[in-house]
Length: 359
Image (cartoon, rainbow, N blue to C red; front, side, top):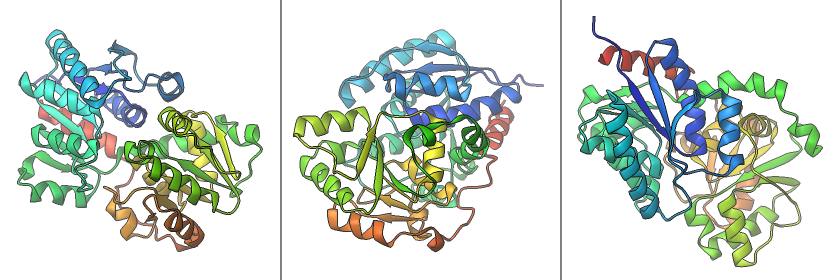
């Protein structure tokens, strides 16, 4: 009987920590050895270390401490450091998540050394190549041996790009696994609602951090104007990038906005499930809103999670103040059409089984 593969997992950003928490647990339960490498892309304690502690992630085998530079600087430094790590750790398989610079760096380093790559959250496309994430996900998909797709639609996209069907696996969304596994823990452990004096359904929740929204002052200003037109309180955990760009542009949050520092995963789950509305440019938060049954306004001109828009769970508003205000006014929980777009919460188990069979 062939031995199980040794896996090297590359993470670097907050959403990847959540995904890795459930997949790493499944790998361990399947007896698959894993070494976790943290690039340091999210280096703020509120964006990184608190997540490792809360989610019970395995100890980091190597921390690269690379962050704070431009996309090119970070990716280049990560490729060089990850090449050294791969040569040292000698993995049978390199596992990456999503579409960050850490994802692309891991994929490039492994592909140059002939190490097979597994990509979790494969097959997503926004068809906007001005987004760094779009380039990252396309390149990673095309050099990966195992493509773990969250939906049938993402599988179809890969097939349409000429990728062999044998490489494509519809496993569902690992973030659904995480929401199912951790929501009860969040309700029992989080005290964020009491701390902030909030009640169920009494507020909207805002998050945005993407470069196209924060680095373009006109878009940033328009988003804030639109948020100011939303009725009731809007809770805003402010991403470090967004805070810095608001300050440099001389912009402040509207009077209806309550600004707080970034929160841990359990606090975020509770805030999401308790909100009457979620406004975000985060792909992960879009899906979490859907899993909680909370309507979502997307602060982007397109989304890679097109199923959410088709199901009327989310509404695209871009950065238009008018569209943001109109979308927020028109959203309601009763309008949602629940369905199993992204599997049944067993995606991490399927991933571990496929990786194990590869041996």
